[in-house]
Structures are given as structure tokens and as C-alpha cells.
Image 1 (tube, rainbow, N blue to C red):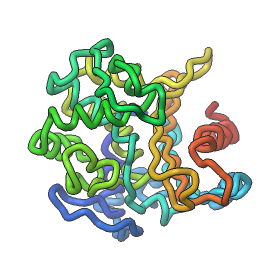
Image 2: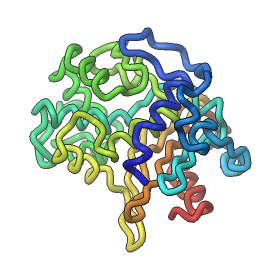
Image 3: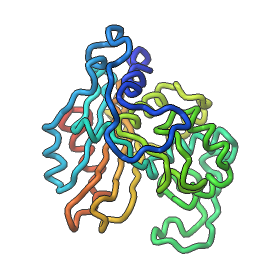
Image 4: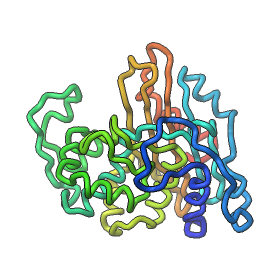
Length: 293
């Protein structure tokens, strides 16, 4: 089922507003929709476009946040969103970009493996986990921003742009600075495009070595049980005091050969609410309601 569906979502997302390489970074706004090319050749569940599930909005309202979740079940071949407009809207990926960035670091040899030591730059950060030398695995786990900014500086603009094009990631823009284009620069991606990238990654459809793909899948592991494996990465912008900060959780659930991909984005919250503390429990609650956890 997985192999037969690879690439179908990519076709759909192009129709829903995927950008061409080197295109100027758009402002966050709903992507334009168009008819799906060769729609008659696609399964009805995909050719019809994402299924909107507005009933899931109550899960966000209960936590006093706004946002959306995009879902794709490889077994059923169904793409769904709780809020279609938000699912098509490109915003900053923040640290969810550490997934492709890790692949690039390994493919280019900037990082040799999970135990490669990334030295502390001796600056003091509010996240105490960043105030020491970290292995590459730890840098991913603790979402060490200065570690990945140092990696970006070693890669340089030319290599970063080449790999964004190779991976077909978001709008492929490195505008805004070599070591911050994914944090506060031009790079943007929608929840639907996150799903597309993750499916191509897990389906071995990216131009990376199987060994490096396996390594990044491993460091993405969030939970392992007898019935499933949960893999993912968080990302956020701003602070909890900023009512319009972003909080991401993207990844997938493995149940044997079955995959359930998800991209949760919180884009607003009530005073006193910290969306970074809610993205994972909210996502897991929705996945459990569907019987996927």
C-alpha cells in the first residue's frame, strides 16, 4: 500500500499550491487550489482532495488554541485536515527543519554520525541543555538551535540551496541568512507539504543514502511500544507570551507496514497558554481517537 501511494500526495500538493524552485518566499497565506492533474488516474480518496474534518476543531478549542492537523493514513489512502485553509498555508518550519537538515549534514559529511560531537560555542543559553558539548543525536533531541546554525554555516548558501531543491522542501527559499533562513527567514512550508516530505522520506523517495535515512529515522524516535513506534520533531517560533507564536509537531506512527503521517500546527493561543506544552498531547489524543495509537 505504501509503495503504491508514493508520489500521489506530491501531485495533489502541487495542485494545492506547491512552489517551484527559486520562487520568491510568499507571505503566509492560503495556497491557491487548482484541479488535480490526471485526476481520473488517482484513487478517489486522493483525487477528491484533502478531506476536511472540522469536528477535530473541538480538540483545539478545548485547549484554548487555534491551529490544524493534517493526517494521511497509508492503509486507507485518505488525506485529511481539520482546517483545510490552514493546512494549505505556508509558515516558518522552525526546528521541524532539523529533519531534512540532519539528512543534509550527514550526506555532505559535515556530521559523520550520531555520536559526532558538536562543540558548545561557550555562549550561555536559556535552555541549559545547549550549554555544553552535545552529540549529534543529543543536538536533535534537545533541538539545539545554535548547533544547527553552526552546521548551516559550514554548509553555506550554495549547498543549502542545492539540497532544498533536491529535497523539494517547502518553498525552497534560503532568504534571510545562512544560519537562520528556517527560523526567521524566507523558508516556509504548509502542513500538507510537511506530510508530503515525510512520506517521501519514509518511502525512500529522497536522494539520500539508506544508511543516513535510517539514522535520522532513529533519532526522530519519540516512543516505542509493543504495537507502534512514534517518530517526530517539534518546532516553534516566538515565546508563549506571543499570542501568534507557532508550535509544530510533525512525524508519523508506524504500525507494522502501516503509516499514519501527521503535521500539527498551533498558530494562536489564549493568554497564559503555552502551546509548546500542548502540541504533543493534543496530537496523541487525536491519533488515539482514530485508533492509531
